[in-house]
Length: 503
Ligand code: NAP
Image 1 (spheres, rainbow, N blue to C red):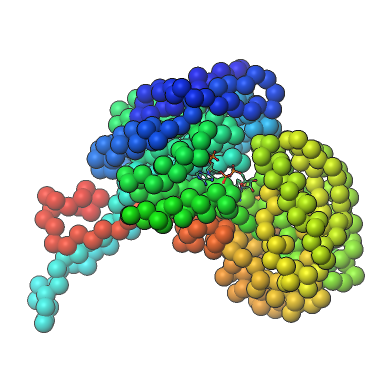
Image 2 (spheres, helix red, strand yellow; image 1 turned 60 degrees about the horizontal axis):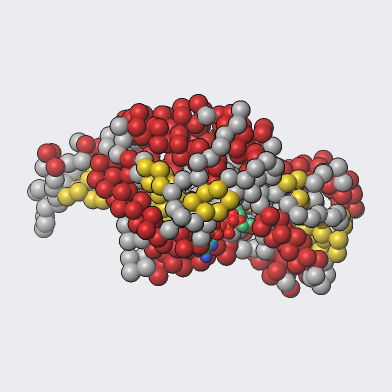
């Protein structure tokens, strides 16, 4: 199976080429050329999305559920070609891409079931009280309505599950919002084939073509124009802290500010409480597995371990070092991400009070693991140690006692996850730690590892800044739909005017 991209944008069902092109950077094989996005195309896609909203935003939930299933079917129909181009462009192993495709179609089908169940509409009614004194109460009903066209930024690290037809797109389409995707330059061919799947589903289901557009990048201008476009009503983003913050600021500075749902950086700390000393070696192996999976390019990568200095510390360190020694070089998603990883390693190594436990040598697009250590005292004195290094790099923070461990917890910035490893004997310590990490993280795990995020109703994938720019939201799981709806109250509406979902 092979796939050769045509390299065009897909704007409201039409293939559009632009004069300027950029190339993808496949790990091996020939490069393909892609049209660079422009401000004019952004405008065209947004105008089409707005036109589509007047149909799609008022469609029945059953129609949208059918459409979501059709997209999933079309992705499955292109399974092998998606894996082919995906692994070529990103260097991710085929098995990982197959798993990610399963997650992507699973998300689409989950949102179909979710909107059919209808709980997300949060329907409320305060019936009229005409006899109430001193003033009668009108009939008031509440319903969640879609907000309008959504901009989605494809993520580099999940070419399928967080990209063209990923969680942001699936939840926006489920809500009734048209989507304009800005493809990520790391995998434009993968974006193209998935966009083709959506385009085919649109035709088969008779949906308005403006419901979906894919604009390739190639210029910063595209992202900027998209978030500043007056017809865009919210943004879904996964990426770097710097990029996300720049786009967030643009959204806030618009004449009409809009919500920017950015999922940015996280170090996903893991706290080891005293009683787990007996299984330190086992934990170290588990940690290394989670830390190095997918070359450490997960937003839930547990980059930092905090443990209380004691007899078991060395056994944990030794086991981690020997597990890391068995991890070979892995191809990173882009040369830019690989060089950012090496810069992060150098930043870590340059810190006073930080020493290397495991070193390796990586170059070009390869990542090999690194392990550093520091003390609670040094951590508390240096904010830089809390910055994300995107890749398989770990830091062990050894603290003097539980008091210092709690201070380290207090010092943390917002996190997507915090993990506590404990035994029954640690219950009291964990009771002290839990309220602190609860203020820091979107998801708290006991005796687990944070990579491998379940897509389900109870999942929160977000957290206080900089984990995300909106701690009331999640980008994984069915609650993600809330980002793209807003409550409207209907007071004294006659039945003929009542939205069908409230009748
Ligand atoms: P990125 O640089 O933030 O880019 C993500 C998207 O935002 C791209 O489409 C990019 O467009 C756009 N963008 C970024 N800055 C912009 C600006 N100032 N104006 C307009 N558009 C802008 O992220 P990335 O390319 O995925 O990876 C780079 C780094 O991000 C990684 O090394 C890693 O540190 C971090 N990352 C973190 C996570 C996480 O989950 N925590 C996930 C992925 C990446 P252009 O193509 O035009 O640049």
